[in-house]
Amino acid sequence: MSTVFGGPVVKAAAFSYGVRKALGNRAAERPPARPEPPARRALRQASGKGRR
Image (cartoon, rainbow, N blue to C red; front, top):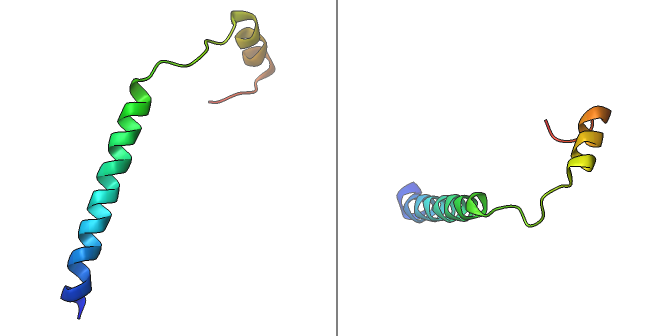
């Protein structure tokens, strides 16, 4: 029973993993849409908020 369902499930999981990786690599190659103004960046860094 596990061989009947196991094969297709593994293939579907591998396919979805490949699609996610491909889309993730495409998004990483794109430059940001709008650069953040230096004043806003400095203000955010001084306040300690933002991504780390």
